[in-house]
Image (tube, rainbow, N blue to C red):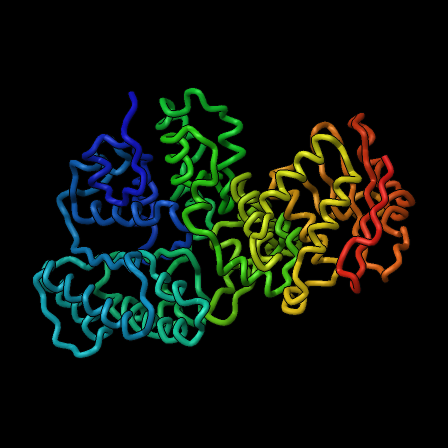
Length: 513
């Protein structure tokens, strides 16, 4: 039987009382409560973090009827209830440390009124500690503290480091209270998009257990394939399951892969494959950061890093790997332990939606503006369908010629091989084509391999002086790069592309099929 789709609903009671679809996450809640008491979780936006915190709130407050038929119903002691202090920074935008102080004051005042206690301390941190202590004393049970979007005030100001730093310090002052009030706390759970460095915002809260990358909780937010079969079966009718999986599945925190709930719910409602999640928040800061740093975009398909690197996020010091992973534009593909205790994480795009949409956005960043990139992508697709490689040269030559001189002056990567290769790669990736970068053979690595329309294209990129040298195509031929693909029985085109740093354009474009 079909139910209503809980699009944008973060209230557990509204979903349970309103005949909405619900994927049971109460088993995760029971596991957390049974095995510990202080947790931290990072997940990308619109992944269901707020709904999970609201589920915890209803559980601790003992609202038994809401859980009928769920995993927690027969395993929870409903005779005991706990006072809950839930703090959310998800609403609105805080633009200064002063505004944050006012926001915290309002939140604390709300909880004093709701719980029937009053604080006498002058500072927000002192009032928060007093609120926890007096609530424990009044109700005779330790307090449950739930913090939603703990990092949003910082992220809203990440492009203004001085403001972001001031806000970070004020939040740190508040969060450190949770550790200081440990004797009065039954359970604490903080969630957000990013995990800031332990030496900054978490230095006063080092008793949190980080469950962000934990196979037991990989599916704590999001929907698995099993969830689709068990809960959303009526909505799958008429949709090609493999296409649903290719477009929206693939987020992984070393356990079960999951879909972004927002994507699936919009797909079910509108019956159209579109980048629903991506369109709700274009990553302006991310695009600006990657392009200004001269990031080599082909690396996005296979970045590698340590756990420390993936967690290195702080005001004024952001590792690209951490930013891409924590915000959901890359996910974990593979985990290795080459040396005991030294874990290596390989990242990749989670799915078709993110790969095509992010590369489309990056093209605008590399060009200084969108400026017709959509038309170029459409023309590129027509050229590949016709296998007209001469037209391919003309398309990119015209494109590079249209980039203003001033933009080259401002961009760190411009003029280098990585810049030109990034442009080529992002255009093909934005079309969602099958691409392999740094494609390994027994004689070396092919810069870029593209498979489309039962044809194979092998690209080699080089930067030369004003006169083409023919070395790009020569390398493709001399190293026998085509041999790896002969088994497919499809036409193989070797394409050597040479760029001039002086003219900032293609000066050599040779093809052999």
